[in-house]
Image (cartoon, rainbow, N blue to C red; front, side, top):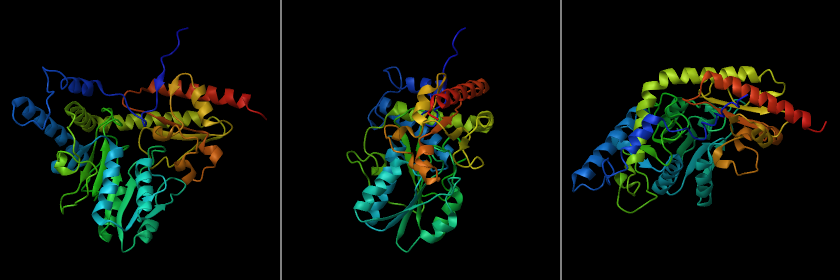
Length: 386
């Protein structure tokens, strides 16, 4: 009997580029395409590239709610997060920042660096569902609080924070709000101004765009001035110098266009696949859901499995590709800081799987995943010492 094709279920780590995105990017690489440096304004090749970049910026604007002039292109969400946090720190020099214990390392690590420079940093806990307590957040704000930084969707457990409520609170108290929306862009409605977000980090590769491109959206009304991290040419309104990669920006813009066109149909279908798999896996004993099911992005399912070790389970799977946590910390032997913040034990945290569906998964993938995980769990439990 022919072996089934493997099924990719690690879309929270990265997504395959949509063929339409790849085709648009390919048209910007060769002499007969739109290959030129968009900063070269002395010939028509450069001017054409500049027009293409601005069209991509317009597409990002329409998906994020940011104005075109508020979008600063970066190499991805990690750089955007660093630019937001360190840029604000340069503006104020000292003060207090608030974030959350379950944030991505691209936020937590810059905060560690700022603490060493004298900034006071508070990391708020989350409840068992992975959500921030708004009253505790309000109580933590003080006279010298300059910034609140919170993820819209957690990269490991997929839990959605109420950024609109946090934005209203921050605006009322005169505090800046930075939101890492790497895992929500293209999957959830996002409107920087309606949600009262001052700084918004996004990237392309989490929703079928290319790797290596993202943006920080910086509020301009009233003007928000932050310091730059890179110098050398004054590109992107002086906040991010460097030659713009036209092909990646075109891919980013096309991914945004496709997301706007398909989100209303894609997300319910993806959520249905996730829910169907969770229903199947609950038939196994000792399987727990990590984080809220109600407040969760469509494609994410994060579970811990008693009686097995997470990496052993990942390697025991024969038909599907998943992860045991964030791809950015996969080399670490430490239990997930996100799962530990939920109250999971070290053993439970290390016995967890992150399964994430995307645009190109189908209903048949649910059956493959359920069978593969169930067989692997039973096999590993049978091998474990009594």
